[in-house]
Image 1 (spheres, each protein chain N blue to C red):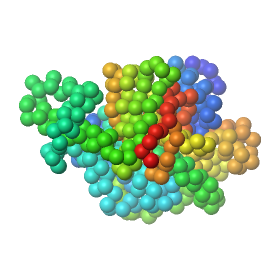
Image 2 (cartoon, helix red, strand yellow):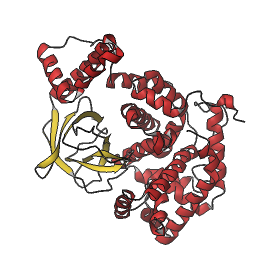
Image 3 (tube, helix red, strand yellow):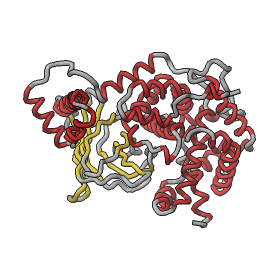
Image 4 (cartoon, chains in turn orange, cyan):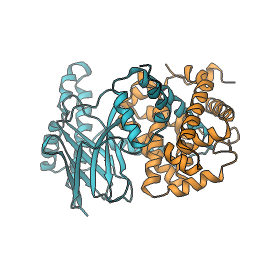
Length: 201
Length: 247
């Protein structure tokens, strides 16, 4: 579905280079490509739109200020942005003592998991096709995990819980949580490899 | 290299799901193990894609402009907006030199006088803003030190603008794949990240970070963290100091 025409003409890491040279249009382009995904991630963690906007603004601000330190040899722009966003979102949740609420929200989504509600096509603000393909890929990969593996990964990813905290939350032995988290992530890595390898240089 | 126990930690580490002690241990191991660093990197990519598991949401249109506007304020290009007092300009120049901004002159021959002037003007403007932020009334300060010996750091917190100006001295650049992270600490609560930064080879830098809204910290501290920063400190801080005044 995603043909060559749908792929951005300029690689993400080139945008970062331009941002390091204080090129604002490159920042705008980066936002157009990743803003929707970054906002969705922030919203899934913080739960409120105003806070999510704050996190997104701060994350792109950080990307702008630190663009010159981005090293493409150490990973993709997608992973870098996601790390920044997740860190900021989890910080905000902690700063506001909202963790309990985040957990409650996660618990509500229990049966289908947080990954369940995929928005209808066309709603995505980013370059649609590519992001939709990524979403489908991730959704499919997650659906191949066991219920328990998926739940454990989601608690870590969206609620910022450590393995010890997850064990307490789920009333499972720590060893079980560790094994399942690792097995789940290994499996995701295996099924997402095609997507990872053809992404960026 | 083939130690299985370490490799098992790479996946949860990339998700920041290790308990603090385990994480600190693994951090130390990462510093000397290429294999595990590569493993962590691979799982960070997986973690990056997991962002797509979040329910799709559409950011408001105004957010794009807000981000671009903020970016313009970080390093404004063009003439200063208002008159700058002579003494403030002098202070700005002094601070610019102190902060190591003087190297632009070396590029004149290559890029032409005009570019150099624009860039100098932009830097002077951003430095003026920096000075204004520091000299505002109700600015809190904190001196961070490692028991009297270098490195050291001075923080200026402008509450009205919600910015923290960080001036670091004799702080060598963080190792490859690592960064420095500044924390704000309210006694009895978990540290909150103010942001990450690094230093040039000279070990001296001035950066502006944002204090998380609504936070009134007693202390600030600096740790070394994996690139991108950590949700919580993974090491004992090597610089600590308490906040004074401004409130």
